[in-house]
Structures are given as structure tokens and as C-alpha cells.
Length: 160
Image (cartoon, rainbow, N blue to C red):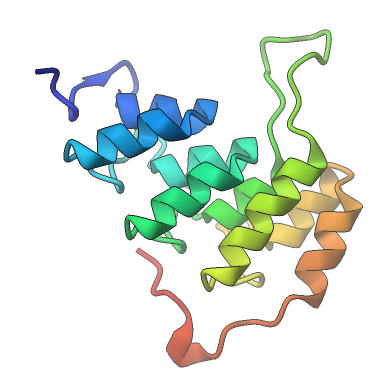
């Protein structure tokens, strides 16, 4: 069989690619075959970061069921919630064609908040998830994050 842990360029795995592209059945199959939910790429992004960035709420929920960390941090200390609030725009596509619908990202934001993500988590730039949402014009998401209660200290997932 295929090696579910194999990496290619920048440390990407099949699970990372499936999460980024929102292929929930592939994510389920890879996790079922033993792929590590917390595998990291060169930017320290786990599959959870990639699914959240693209607004793939069903993949986010599947990863959460498989015990993926809601508070994991990438190379600049962004959590999946920071990336879900930011959304995705393909840097290669100057026509503006590939964009994540804000409502898809809202579903990912809500899934992460239900799982205990900290809406006030700071990255290395001192930004909270709501700051990313506001900068990208996702004002509904920013408002949702502003109103979201912060988990009590004993219930916040530990940062990795």
C-alpha cells in the first residue's frame, strides 16, 4: 500500500493536500489508514490549519473528531482560528477567481469555537483572529469573534 506519511516539497502530505482541498472522504480514509492528524509542513501548518484557511468546516470537524489540536500554532503562532478568520485567496490567481466564501469560513470559525478555540489568541504579530477577519473585510466573522466568549483558563486548549 501507499505510505500515508510520505511527504513532498515543503513537507506536504496527502492528508495536508486533502484537508486543503476539502476532500473529506479522502481525509477520513487517510486518517483511518494511520495518517498523523498533527503532521506539519515547512510553515508548521497542520492539516487543521489548511482546512480552516479554506473554510472546509466538514474537514475541520472530522479532524477535531480525530483529536487534531484546535490550538496548534504555525510558524508565526497563528491558530487554525486565525486562518479561518482570514480566508483564502490564491496568490497565483490575479483574476481573483479562487476565493473562499465568507459563509464557508464562518462555518469553520463556528466549528473551531465550539471545540474551544480561543478567539483572543495572539499570534507573533500581536493579532487576534478578529483582526484577520476585519483586514479581509469579513465583518460578520469579525463580529462573531468579538462576541465569542473566551474559554475559561482551565478549559483553553494548551498551545503547542
